[in-house]
Amino acid sequence: MAATDFAVEIRNLRSTLDSIRAVSDPTALRAKIAQLSEQASAPDLWDDPDAAQKITSALSSTQSELDRVEKLGGRIDDLETLVEMATEDGGDADTLAEAENELTGIARDLGELEVRTLLAGEYDIREAVVTIRAGAGGVDAADFAEMLMRMYLRWAERHGYPTSVLDTSYAEEAGLKSATFEVKAPYAFGHLSVEAGTHRLVRISPFDNQGRRQTSFAAVEVIPLIEQTDSIDIPENEIKVDVFRSSGPGGQSVNTTDSAVRMTHIPTGIVVSMQNEKSQIQNRAAALRVLQSRLLLQRQAEENATKKAMAGDIKASWGDQMRSYVLHPYQMVKDLRTEFEVGNTSGVFDGDIDSFIEAGIRWRRGQDGARA
View 1 (tube, rainbow, N blue to C red):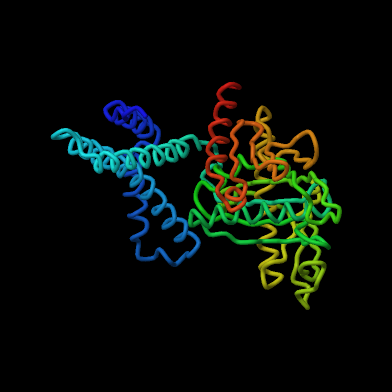
View 2: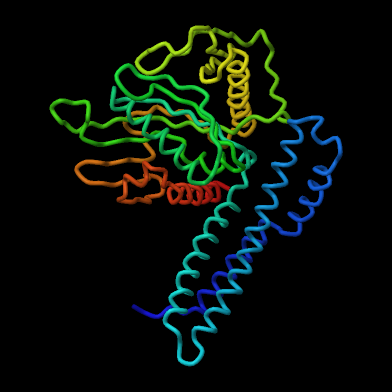
């Protein structure tokens, strides 16, 4: 194996970091931190808890973004010093190995930060609302929908992102008809938006007593979470609200009161159901928030007709899948847009999907550039 040319590699790392700095603009970040810090120190900050939460969250997020850029610069400097130490007096194998590991780690972290700079869409910084629906494939599709939900929740858990399940509609035999959950972290929408589309699973069906191979589909929709400043006002006469009792797996009743809410936007036909909160008032508020988010996305698509609506028309059937998960006769997960693939299917279903998300973000930027 050829020896690593650390001089070239470090020069490449610095070049990448310079590109990231040009986009992230540390000077502007420091000015924003100073402004937010001043707002956060106001004595009446918590008189409005919602506004206070937004300010403190924005301050933490901006400070973290600046810290990532500055710490990577320091790590590159330390790596250069480590390499100089390792090459003195003929070279130190252990120190060189340490430098190799640190080089790999810095390159990985720079790659992740570089991807963040590609998230420049209007709503990329937002939290995300994810809806998964079982498609063609019967009980296998319902089971696949549940597998995908666990995959995304595990991905969020790996990153320390809080999540909140808003609604689950269980299938009769196994799995889910649909589920909706929030991922409460900055840029959750920017990252997960590339996961929207039809997902396809090929495996030996655990529900087929003859052990036949089954193909099933599930649809993933990702929308940005609404904020008060978005001004999506919905007249009351445009909303129909139905209440019903929450249910568990197999139609089992889990609530003795009519706390679940189904909200229909009459002009567009958009329907949102919520049943996972404890009270009807909480479910109604959650349903309205998701409905507003979907209408916001629709408005954006209408205002810019050259862009495809982010949620899209997802059929969850043959011919329009964006990713395939094959468990038989071989093991592979492949994104059909980016051509990125891995053989570790169990890792993917356990939430190890960052490489797919990164490839998707880079692919989307390339598509946007080609259309520009």
